[in-house]
Length: 125
Image 1 (tube, rainbow, N blue to C red):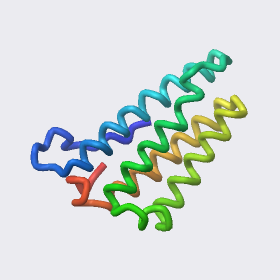
Image 2: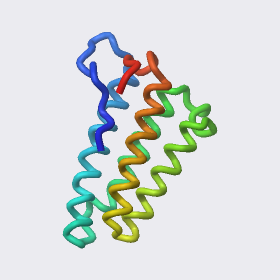
Image 3: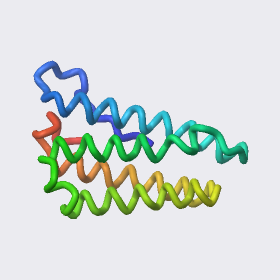
Image 4: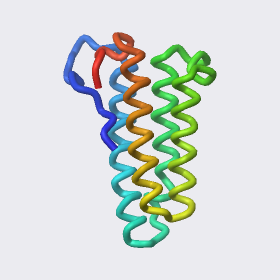
């Protein structure tokens, strides 16, 4: 999962930028750890922790987008659906579905970040 943003070292960015970046990096690490757990066929803590990291990233995006508007927006609904798909793949222990779900999640989050544009200090992902 690669959801971190270029230009993250820009000192003029908004506080939400840092939060989104940190949450994206934490979600990226959690997804990698979860993947290892799935490959090993074990019920590792990483498998249980991934959902919390994805929800934290969604909350950071919601804050950057203006709070309650996010939850009912097309981007917010897509990110929520992609998060559920990842959760279902983890629950089933399905590595192939997990890989596809993470890929879809990355694309969905990247699209949302781009749409937020200057609010996150970057118009590209």
